[in-house]
Each structure stands twice: as structure tokens, then as C-alpha cells.
Amino acid sequence: AGKKIYKGSVALDARFTRALTEPGGLSCERMAHISESLQRTKKFLNRGCSVDIPLAGERQKNIQEAARVLQEKFSGFVISVFEEARWDAWLIAQLLVQSFPLTFGSDWYDVDGVRLMLAKRAQLLPMLYDGRSQSSSGALKNLLSMEKIGPICDYQLPKTLEHLGILRYHPEFKKKIQDKVVILKGSPEEIEIRTATSVSVHYLLRHINARRKANELKEIEYIDYLALNVT
Image (cartoon, rainbow, N blue to C red; front, side, top):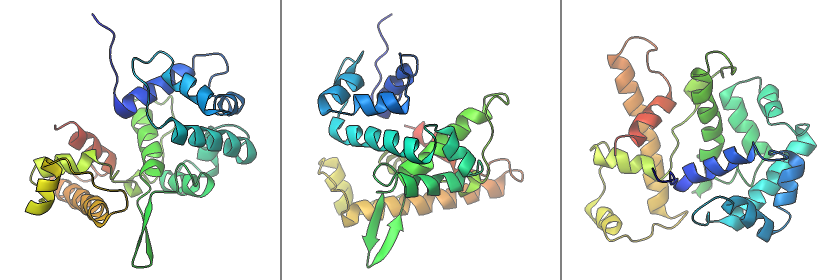
């Protein structure tokens, strides 16, 4: 069988997972070293990869921030973030936004003078951790307040919701997508589609819960997982 090829965020996740088994792991010292220059960051990211992982410059800055903030505020350990937030998913997301503004706190829009915070990455971290803890047979501590997390408004979720007929695009907007016109970051179209996605998922979750046993399916992460595996 040929070597398994990873794409997108899965490829990036696989690279960092491999890094945990390498000398130095992902200690603050090593992260500071590999992000000292763009050349070192690219060498780290692309090691063992069949294609170059994109956005190396942005990822270099994120790694630099992680190394610096973890060392200065959290004794160099990610678990300290969870402990300071008292293992509360919503507090973890808030702490990430406040402590790591470049990596976790930049996902927001100014809408008529009002800050609209979506915080995709900050919510994704506790969601991913909770998914693993729920299947760890007690090896990992479960998080509190998971019902406050999500939805994760990325570019994948609205595609699935539109495919299912839950979201309907205006004909002009749908033609843009079919013609592969780039939707610019911060544009009205991007803001509208992400906020519509958030509202749609909340209503979908409420509708499903009303038809199931109490508390059988109460958290966004299950909807997020199911939606991403439809198409």
C-alpha cells in the first residue's frame, strides 16, 4: 500500500503530532528555536511531507507567540491553560483569546461599530480536546460547559449546510461560488455566510434535541462532526 497522504489541517496536525515524538518534543525551547527564522520554520513544517505546508510565515508567528506566552504566563505547559480556566471549555476559549491574541484572538469583525467575535480557533481547541477525552476511557479529564462552545464557522460547514438545503444562497452569490470567485476576508459576503452558519447550526441543534431524549445530543461538536462528514 502507498503512503497515506494528508491534506489541509489534517496534514498540519499530523506534522505536529510527529513532532511530539522527536527530540525536544514541542517544548517552549524547541518552539522558540524552530520559529527563530522563517527558514527553520519551513524546514520543521515540511519535514517528512510530500508537499510544502502553506502559510509558513503566519505559522512562524503563531509558534513564536505560543513559545513566548506559554513560558511567560503558563510555566511552559499547555495544561496550565486548562487548569487556570478550571477545565471549563468556555473559560478556556476566553483565556486563549486574551492570552494569545495573534493566534486565537484575531477572528472578529467590526460590524457598524460592534465587535462580532467568532473565535474559530479558540473554540476549536477545547472542542477537539473534548472529543478525545470523551473516548479516552477516563484517561483525560472531561471539560465543563461544552454546551457553550461552537459552532466552528469555517468554510467547510456552510458548504455542507447548503448541500443539505439548510442554507440557501442568493442566485448571484451562488454563481460567484460556482465561478470560483474569491470571497475576500472581512467582506460582507464572508461575514453574512459565517453568521448565517452560526445561526443555522444553533437552530439545527435545537431541532434535533427536541426530537431526541433529554440531553442525548446537546453539544455543538456532534453537529460539527456529522456535518463535516456528510460530503
